[in-house]
Amino acid sequence: MIANNNQYDVAILGGGLAGLTLAKQLLMLDPAIRIAVIEKRSFPVNEAAHKVGESTVEIGAHYFAEVLNLKKHLTDQQLPKFGLRFFFKDADQAINEGTEVGGSEFFAAPSYQVDRGRLENFLAQEVEGMGATLIAGCRVKDIELTSAEASTQPPHIVSFVRNGEPQSVQSRWVVDASGRASFIKRKLDLSEDLDHDVNAVWFRIDANIQIDQWCDCPDWRSQIGKVPRRWLSTNHLMGEGYWVWLIPLATGSTSIGIVADPEIHSLRDMNSFGKAMDWLAEHEPQCADAIQRHREKRQDFLAIKKLSRGTRQVFSTDRWGLTGEAAAFLDPFYSPGSDFIAIGNTMIAKLIQEDRAGRSIGQLAPTLQSVYLTLFQNNLLTYRDQYPIFGNPRIMALKFVWDYAIYWGFPALLYFNDKLTDVAFIQSLSKGIEEMREMNLKMQEFFRAWYEIEKTGHADPAFVDQNEIDVMTRMNRELKEKLADADLRKRFFGNVEICKNLMAEMMQRVKRYQPDVEVTNTANPGEYYLDRTFETLNI
Image (cartoon, rainbow, N blue to C red; front, side):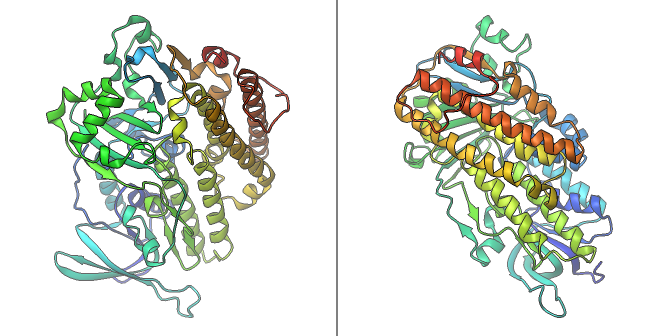
């Protein structure tokens, strides 16, 4: 522990979700650690109209609920999430006249819809109560990073302005959680082009816009039971080159966003609230009508160009790290933002723990960075050049199965079992990890090739119930099982085989349906999982 008043063990730049959760995680592991969280805003922040990133999926949800012990807050103060749900329809079709892909029941591993303002206010109080120093209402001016090779190992220095006065803190570790400000990444010129370009606009409406109310057809409503609950999903309205999200918040507001490929839908056509409403009226008129009734209740609006951001480095043996958007950001589709906060924070916490115990991180830092960037790059394959496909329900319904299987079968499985920082264990899976990467690369290419043959995918009235796909419910349920190393290794390689079977089954069946589609896998699957799904999609 460093003793002086302006000296800390860890200085965290940014008191948003990434920075506050890291502070809580470190204090839970070591209550004696001295942490300064340096944040430009003052607390409490506004609820609802604050930040996006409200939808969590399994890794992020597990991190918040179980690793950080926030389950009571999530249960009492936030909303349960009824999975990811996708709607495909023409502009002149009603919501029940197109194809819907989603669950009829909650999956076993829970996820949540979180009001970021409410959660960050709670976390700020938590970490202060645990002993962190929260330096709010200030603006970071400079960071002086020192080398671990220096004989005296001098601390890093963070300079900032607070109430018009220049101040500074010294710290052995600095973690950049400043979001898109990315102080360290900019200072060290670490940015990397991901060759994936999407833009987004979003806003919050102070009203609970329930998609269940868009249709009063009893058959459609009864597909997911007697109680209307589609609105609890992260609902996606899908079209060629775009998707629209609707996310409910516990405050009673609804978060709405449009994410689009600029080659197909220009940001200029939606970069104000009025333009966004006009765009929705053209492409998703039911959504526009639902918002129009509450137009005067708009709480905010923001447009952002080039959402995706890469980095060449996330951790350093010089005792600094990047987390959250200050490190990298993929795409809001599938809600991976909180996942990479969980993964990055857990790796940073491991590095700080090892350093404080007097053990070298000379090998650990680059190894964990390699794991992080491998996960990031493999996930990037899911999005790159895929937005044109988003309007085709047949292709996307199968892509969802594939993408979930890769996610639940590899990174989620290892994170739930606390193995993403176990270097020896990860190395023992290297053959299977490489197989997963190669299969994912081939499958994303396959979906694009199929799209070139079948660009117009008409949305027939159909409900693809993901709870009826046994392999999906099983892989999700298995996330909750704590396994010994030998059993976990067996489960992982079993998931590799499941993905091989899925790959062969999809390619084989689609090849019969669309003979012109070129495939790279001619093997027969050892097990078939998707017969009912193919029938529902008329494949």
